[in-house]
Image 1 (tube, rainbow, N blue to C red):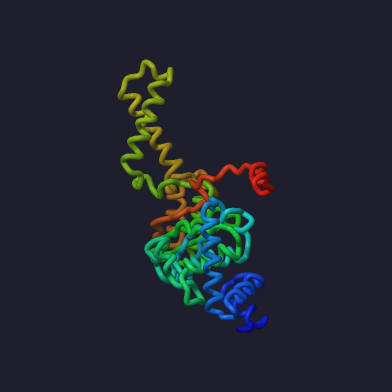
Image 2: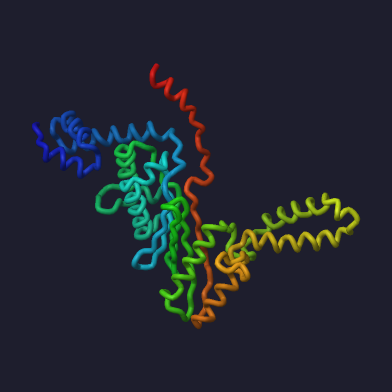
Amino acid sequence: MAFTAKDVQALREMTGVGMMDCKKALTAADGDKDKAIEWLREKGLAAQTKKAGKIAAEGASFAVVTEKGVGVIIEVNSQTDFVAKNDVFKDFVMALAVVVAEENPADVEALKNCRYPGTDRTVDSVTADKVLTIGENIQIRRFVRYDTGVNVPYIHMGGKVAVLVNLEVEGIDAAKVEELGKDIAMQICAMNPSFRDKSDVDSATLDKEKEILMVQAKEDPKNANKPENIIEKMVMGRIGKYYEENCLLQQAFVKENKVSVEQHIASVAKELGGKITVKAFTRFQTGEGIEKAEENFAAEVASMIK
């Protein structure tokens, strides 16, 4: 079966694959588009398998709030920072955030089975095509969705860090807390708190911290002659410092470090005549916790010329 340049173009638009590969697919499939798509799928899946061994520790974290007020933060990884700046990759990440907002998948696996916007295909299927088109391993790593309250997103350095803040607001127009939400998000981005409030610190974490501080205090020569109860009081004082460093609401507000974040929120709420509560927040730093491979460039070049 013969095919034309228009057939090649149509196949390219359907799959997002390069013109030459589309021509090869149509040739191999004797002009049959369905078979050509199947041929490209097979090549795409093969490429994805080959790339899967490559560590995807770059990429982008993205936060957005839809017109309905649903907030989504998502991280998608690639192998290189260069690809993360590619418009095709960025559009893909934004589309995934829309899917999460609209479909509310339970987890990443459920997201992969959702329909990709503007197509009748799954997210997983389209991801395979992106691997083929971009030429790198791409992994959807994680996402969080908030569908109540006021959600405020913040993206730092083009997706190196993303933050989503979820506020509960009473007696105040939501639009009036946007600036506060942005300030809190920037605080979270810069200071990376582990907890929302000191009441959220679990007992295991607190006990471990007390244990460490107790050992430090006892080993300090200045405390050699101090009784146990005095050392315990000193440790409890240092726990207060732990809260100030690790709990968002107890941290010094970065724009005015003479007050805590909690005090600043209370001040803004009073000024606006209502109540504002930070219910939750999520901070994604792209690639955090992923072990990056140590590439031996000389060995890689040598292997290519054998």
